[in-house]
Length: 415
Image (tube, rainbow, N blue to C red):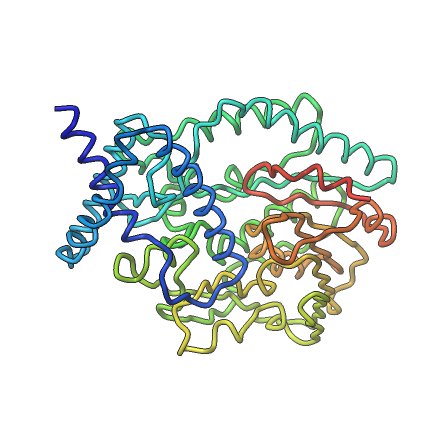
């Protein structure tokens, strides 16, 4: 019986592995797809190490691969492929495996594809280390008279945790966030939890994210910008007119079936479907400048200059990872100035990609916003001294905007 069960695991894993392997003909890649493939490579390396120490697994993989290739061709309807994905996930979980070979996500009943977490025994120590980095950085800012706010963006699988299938209720994230918030409170690090601010009801929560991507939608970016602005008004004496964030003040540029996100691009369109992509454009478009030195971008114009329309307008390349249109995807350094408002504030945002959809809308309310991305896995990342940048530009405030604690906050202290 155990032999049959083990073979079933290998067989289903092989099917999913073959189905989700990196395509031979590569789609156009950007920072998001490269980040995803880097994650895939890490998981494949872990799988290879496991197979070296598990004789039954190493013997069965080649045969499983051949059988999977033949079997996959017989499943042409989406329901069969959905069944295989969920069956594989449940079998691997039941068998005590810490990952699903060949995949990094599961599909929820709503159709949302969600990344999975590893059960890390060192979560507590990692969180403590990163919070120490942040706390030390905040103290360095205080010495310079610069204010600080950590803005926590809502992570997709944490918000949609109630949709997880039986056996996949993710307790890892719940525990880590609780502990992180506890440490922030103890160290008196200012924290704005956006999920507490913008999620109005279950209907809003269900529609927050793109199904094929881990990112949130444009309307969430507007709501997040409003929440940050309200916080700045209340706690830091800003005078931002939050009426600019009312949805009635926007038109919508609609791109039907233009998006296939970072998860969906690996699943391929034979499994999932392209999604519509909407960009909210303020009716009062204003005048902005945007500078991205590493990409040779220097533009002045209406709000539209903050959006990469070349990525969106070429229908021959649809679907694409359209989310990358916001502030031209991830860049080492971005400078945005709003020439249309009577304001003299300068803010530095240190962020992951969740901030990309927030920054354009927040720039309606702040004279100047600079943005840096410290993450080394990004091809274009900031690699200079953050404190020197702050000293040179005399920012009023620094915002951290992340969906999760970064494992690279030590890079705040680059010389």
